[in-house]
Image (cartoon, rainbow, N blue to C red; front, side):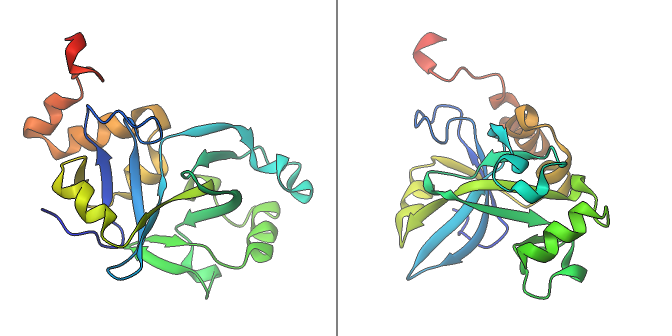
Amino acid sequence: MEMPINGLLLIAQPFLKDETFCRSVVLLCKHHDSVGTFGFVLNKKLQSKLNEYFEDLIDLDLPVFYGGPVHNDTIHYIHQYPQYFDDAVKIADNIFWGGNFEKLKTLLLDGTIEVTKIKFFLGYSGWSAGQLYDELKEKSWITAAPSTKIIFETKENNVWVESLTKLGGKYKMMVHFPTDPQLN
């Protein structure tokens, strides 16, 4: 069983029925054994856009993703721009979380950063201490190393399929499994 670590991708197993995480891929951002784990669902794009939350970004039509069911009144972001944010948290190689949001807005508006290397989330996914270990033991999740291609470049409706396909073998076959095995 893979242990939860920062940067790990959690890929929902094909028969996971939980609506929140069905066919989802979650990037783990922070794990601590005694506190718990949090991350962001990568492949559930919302209808809303970033400029609907921030009036000063009205000219930017950037997508926002459903990060998870916790504190879904908060905006978070991951990116590939550590050089601009001293306060960004490294999640994995070339994947960072957060940073000064006012500085981000300036960089977005003046075109300094490419919008293809940043992803915004409403809310986040959280697990209490030990909860994710239990879910991994139950095989609710398949784990994979982080991939900037999957995280930043793959279209949201292909993230789950591409994540499993990249693992190859039996995982590649899982992309064809129905959500409900009784319907097979």
